[in-house]
Length: 240
Image (cartoon, rainbow, N blue to C red; front, side, top):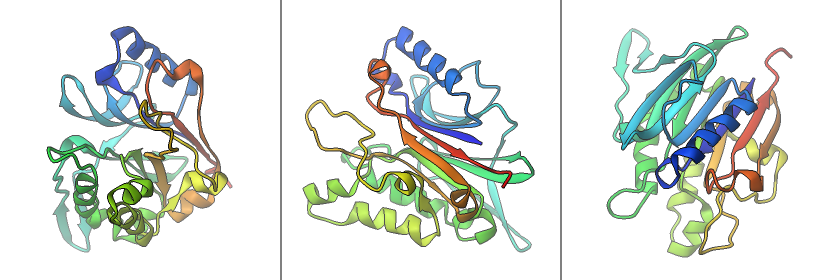
C-alpha cells in the first residue's frame, strides 16, 4: 500500500501548475492520498473532500472505495464525530487486502489570530473518540501539513507544538518519517527562512507502522513550481 502526503499549495498556483501537480500524483499511483490545499480532480475515483474556500480544501483521495467516518461506535453508543474545523479534517475508511484502514487528512489551518496549533489541538480533541480505541488506531494513519514543528516552539518560547506531537504519541501513533530519517528532513521551503521545518508529517498505528517498508520526503526541483511543500511517500507491506 502506497500513501502520498502533500500540500498542493492550490491558492498560490496557476491553473497550469495545478494540472501538472495532479499529473504528478497520477505518476505516484498511490493507494491513499492525504492532501491539503487541494481541489477535487477527476483522476481520483474516490474522495472525501472538505472544501475550505475558492474550491480548495482538505481531503482523502483513493483508487479504492472510501467511506467517510461521521460517527464512532463505543459499545452500544453511537458518538457523532464533531469537527471544530471541518474544512481542516477529513476521516475516511477503506478495506485493502482484508485490512480495515482508517485514513485521516489533517490540516493545520492558521486561524484569525495567526495560530495553527490551536486548530490542531481542537481537531485532535475532536478525534479522541476514534483515537482512544486501540482497535481503531492499530490500522490508522493520519497525515498532512500540520503547520507545526518544535522549531516553532523555540521561536515562540513555549511547548504548544511539542505537546501536540506528544498527544499523538500518547495515542500510540508513530512518526513514519522518523523510522527511516532520524535527522531532520525539510518538508517546506520558506522564502524567508532556511531552517529545515518539518511541517508535513505522517503518523501511523502500530500494525501499519510495523509494516512500513519505506518513507521518503521527495525534494525534487521539478516539483518546486507546483508547491512550496515536498511530498511524503510511504509504502506499507500489508501481506507480511
